[in-house]
Amino acid sequence: MTIVVTGGRGALGRHVVSALPDARAVSRSTGTDLLRGTGLSALEADTIVHCATSFRREVDMARAVLAARPRHLVYISIVGVDRVPFAYYRQKLAAEDLIRSSDVPWTILRATQFHSLLHRIFAASARLPLMFVPGFRFQPVAEAEVAAELARLASGPPAGMAPEIGGPEVRPATELARTYLAAAGKRRPVVPVRLPGRTFRAYRDGGNLTPGRAVGRVTFEDYLT
Ligand SMILES: NC(=O)c1ccc[n+]([C@@H]2O[C@H](COP(=O)([O-])OP(=O)(O)OC[C@H]3O[C@@H](n4cnc5c(N)ncnc54)[C@H](OP(=O)(O)O)[C@@H]3O)[C@@H](O)[C@H]2O)c1
Image (cartoon, rainbow, N blue to C red):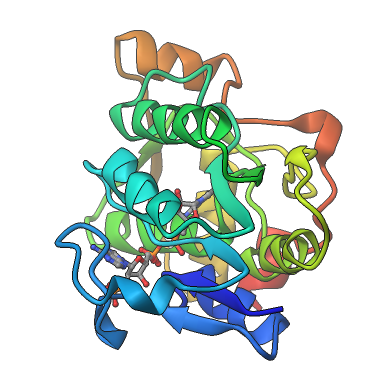
């Protein structure tokens, strides 16, 4: 069985490639641009694990991957794309819908935010004397654990909507930010930011969480150390 991993050098994709020794990474850096339509012959495979992403053109990307007509398409999505009306999440949901309505056999896995994403957000906000963080909770998960689940799903038959995967702990962003500061040896006042609007309300209501599926084992502390 041949397996291709789009975005196979990204934060998630490189772990999927490590977990599937025979898989081939495909991205712009290997000569395939899913949006410009170049190098698409590299997508020819029995199974495509689709980890490449585009903030504004996620649906166009999914269309390009479906056009390669794999026997099994495995797509990584995000917990809460159907609850949080963030523009990128709407794109992810529309991409899911396109895949669900296609005749390509599929599996979709939704995951919570990755530890590496929170790490990047906190590192950027810690550049200021006051550390502003979102006034809601996260349930971060190790991308290596999500990758292991994607690899397992890619090795099996198409499974439709797979059970979601969330990190082991639901914690306020303020607590996670203090954990980051302690690990980085920095001291900053942490200021929660509350913004108006439907998107932030949905986050405050826990739309990005899946407490019933807290199946990841690696905590944010573990990840940072
Ligand atoms: N980050 C999170 O917290 C999180 C949580 C849940 C789910 N997810 C989902 O996980 C997936 C992967 O996220 P990630 O954080 O690993 O992203 P990432 O590190 O930004 O990797 C994305 C990959 O997409 C490739 N790519 C971008 N544009 C492309 C194009 N036009 N053609 C071909 N390849 C292209 C990039 O490689 P090149 O630059 O070489 O093309 C890159 O390797 C996304 O679908 C995301 O929605 C992420």
